[in-house]
Length: 255
Image (cartoon, rainbow, N blue to C red; front, side):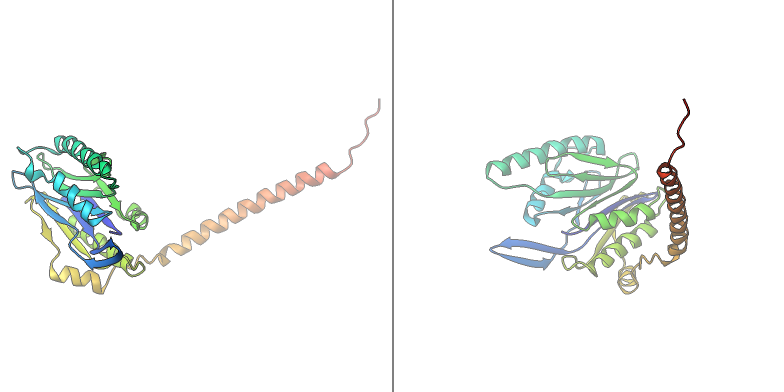
């Protein structure tokens, strides 16, 4: 997978991913598949996860972290501890077979205390969780990070986040052949149940994606550049004056 995004919002979480999967079985086979997996805790809280890396290995990792398979309902702090152990053991088992585990996972859910919680799991099992912010994975993650740095705020709503996430994936797909399709799901705090974009929302994003047009920012940037150029010129003039003074012959001192 080339890009996956999870965002913690004021009223829930949003998670999105492209749909193109590449498998190497002698030849590279590309297909479109669902990459966001819908799981749940024992108490019915929805749990959404997507992955980057080998598709088959990702499915094995997702099976290991499925909270519905755990003996009892747990909060995200305990879940994190269990996941780190399970994924590190999976990596060890695969390593014994000479298989490199490369799946990176993102997840989003609503914790027992009602807080939106997002997480990032690397192949070694190390897990990072947050109650606000965002995580991105995939080759195109740096581009998504740049946009989210300016777009994200802790009071962002699901309504805005799902359009930004969907628009980002759609935009990246226009310049990256390995990104195709777009899935976006969200979990409101109010219901703790996952919801998919409506037909109208999906087609609205696809037909009029965010342009990320920075033309409105050009004039302030140009003014900043002019100020920096003036500062450089002032420094250059001072340096030139100093050099001229140093080059002038100094009067001899009388003994």
